[in-house]
Image (cartoon, rainbow, N blue to C red):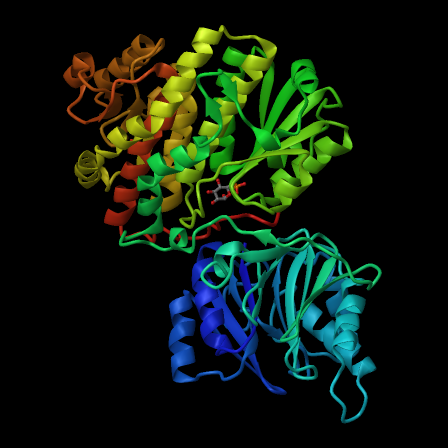
Length: 621
Ligand code: G6P
C-alpha cells in the first residue's frame, strides 16, 4: 500500500516525482506529497485527496530542485489529512521521510521523543523516523560543514536499529544536499538506473517511462542515491552489498490507458493478449510437453509430493480455488486452498513432502509472503505464481512462474486473474504429465483448447453491449447473489468480489447447491441472481436451482452457452458465451462478470480504478 518515488538527476524533481506518483496512485490515494531539495533548501508540498490536488498545489506554489522524494498514501495510522500526509519532517524541518509499512513500536519511540521535548505534528507512526534521524544527524553534524553522505547513511542506519515493524523508506535532509537514502524491511523498494538519473520507487510502474533497469533491494538493504550513482549497503553491518540489475520486461505503454476510460476496462480487454503472452513458449503440442523453466522442482519431487497447498488472498485466492478442481482431476493429487491470512496463524500440517504454492499478482501481499515463509520454515518446497519479476514472493520462493500479463494498474484484478488461471492450467498439466495421471490424448486435447482460449475470451468480450444494457437495468439494486457450481463456483465468488470492490454493492457468491441451505430465503425481485450456467456436467443441476429462484419471483441474469433455449425460456437477461469445452469455461465466464461489474460501477459514478478504501497490493497485515 502507499507509493514511494525518489529522484536524483538533471530534471525538475517535482515534475518527475508527480509523474511517478501518478503511475503509483493505484497503491494509495487518500493524500499525497513531495519534498524537494534545492541545494540546502528543503521544501514540502502535501495535500489531501487525489493526486490532482497536489498537482494543483504545485502549479500554484512550485518547488525548484533536482532531488526529491514523493509519496501517495493509503492511511494506516491517522486519518487522511494534510498533517498526516507524507513526507514527514523532523523538529528542525531539515529531515523529511516517506514511508510504506508500519512501525510497530512507534508509541514507545514517540513517548521517548516527547520526553525529550519533541513536538509531533501528525498522528502517524512515520513521524518518529523523521525525528530520530534528525537527532542522529545532529549528533554527527560538525559546525558549518555539510554532512558527509556516509554520515547521513549512518544516521539512518542507527535509526533503523531502533525500529520494529516493516518499512520502505526514502529520506532526504537539507544537511546533505543531493543525496537520498532508502531502506527496506518487508516492504518493496527498488532503485531505477537511468541516464545520469536515479530513482527510488516502491513499484516498477513509477520508473518505467524513464528506465527499465532496476535493482531490487533485499530486506535489510539500504541505498544511497546521488548524482554519482547508487550504492547499496547492509543495514546490519553498514558494509557495501552487491545486487544484480534486472531488466524490467514491461513495455511502458502497458502502463498507459491507451484511449480507454479506465485502466480496468483496458485490462479486461487485454485478456486475450495476456493469455497468449502467458502461454507463449510454454506448450509444445507436437511433443506433448509443458515448459515451466523456472519451476525448479525435479521430476522426482513432483512425483513424490504428498499434497499441494495453495495460499493466496482476494482474487488470487479464487484462482487457487479453481486450481483445486484441476489438480484433483488432472494430477490426481490432494490439494488444499487456504486464505493466506488464516494459514499463517494456523498450525498447518505441512512438511518437506509438501508443495506450497503462493498465488499473488503483486508478489508483495504481506499475508501471502508470511504464509510462504511459514511453509518454508516447516521444510515445504514453495512455488510462487506472480506477475512481478523481482517481487518479494518471486525472490523468496524456491520455484516461480511468472504470469506475464504486463502491469495491472486497476485496483480490481482482471487480467492478472486470467493469467493466473492459465498458469494453473499449465501447472496441472505439467503435474499430470509427470505423474502419468491423465492419458496423453486428453493432455493433447487440453493443450489445444488452451491455445484456443484467447479466441474464446475474445468472443466473450463481444457481450459488452449486453452487459451495458443489463447494467442499466440493474444498477440500482442493492444486493446481488452470484451462483456457480463446480468449476464455475470460484467464478461466482470472483464475480461477487468484483461487484462489491468497484460498485460498493453488497454481493455474495454461493455454490448453487447451497441455495436451499439459506440464501433462498433472500430471494425476491429486489435480489438479482447472477448464475454462471454454461454447459457442463452440472448444468442440469444449476438449471434446477435457477428454476427454484424464478418460482420465487427472483430475477435471474445468466451467463450461458450460445443457443441454450432452456435458459432463454427462463430469463430474458442472458450473457451469451461461445460454445467451448467445460474445462475452459471458467477463464471465459469471468469476462462477462468483470464487464457487468465495471458498467454497473460506472453508472453508479464510482471511481473504478481506485475504489474507496482499497489498495492494489496489501503490503501490511
Ligand atoms: C488486494 C487487491 C486485490 C488482490 C488482492 C491480492 O486486495 O485489491 O485485487 O486480489 O489484494 O493481491 P495479490 O497481489 O497478492 O494477488
